[in-house]
Length: 345
Image (tube, rainbow, N blue to C red; front, top):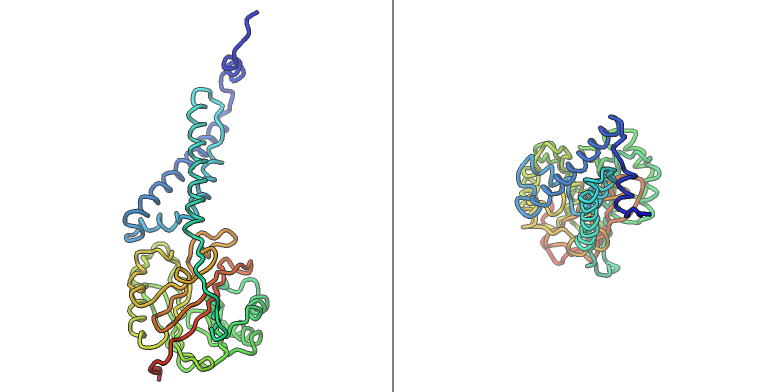
């Protein structure tokens, strides 16, 4: 009796393909999408080590392939590729899937090392706590958001997408935060302060981006806060609005300055160094935890940022977790260098 080898048994079981046209089409679509994902990841890596987001429309690929997203993209490509029933291509398919798995692990380690920061200092009793949060148009309700903000207990709160341009919503914020002076921004954001707003000035960062300037007094401290909302439109370059913001920061460099908001730009963007000439991203300098803030519950981009100038010291910056928005809240502890010349009229 002649025994069949395992390879012969496998071939006899496989036999000719009996897949119908729909299954073959579905497999083609799945694998075409896998190849597209691999191509996007490859282009994203090339951009990361060359021009980054310097030019549109290549910047779009750069924005959709942050380091933290690469393992997710490749897991999706792995699942879409699936297994092959054709013995002629099974071996190459198996090798491809194995390489994909190795890349997933490699990118996951890279993301962990790049996106986890442990540089915070212990805040002192004199530190001023500042909360920034994009509240996603208050879709979970002002009452829930306000209760969470009160629990975090900070004298300065800056919110983006708070729907403050609606009188009823603004009044609700004021009712829910009775210990604060609540002042709306012209683009729907607001600040809430246990102190005094001395002056408010609106700035447009063209195209389609906004900034609100608040000159504040909180206790014995006097400083300027800029609440920023950079346009999220992928078709628009971030270069001009971020350059305008850097120019404004330079003009306000004669007083303690805090800039917070939704930059809709990863914090390693080539368009941020002009702002870095006068200010510092305090999470990268004194942060703790995972850097990415959007989108919840699996954030991959550090869009929500806090910057300060040389007249402000930061001891700690932390990105918190909440399901009440697709953005993570940011809480910072800062002090102001003294003495300094009071220049805010």
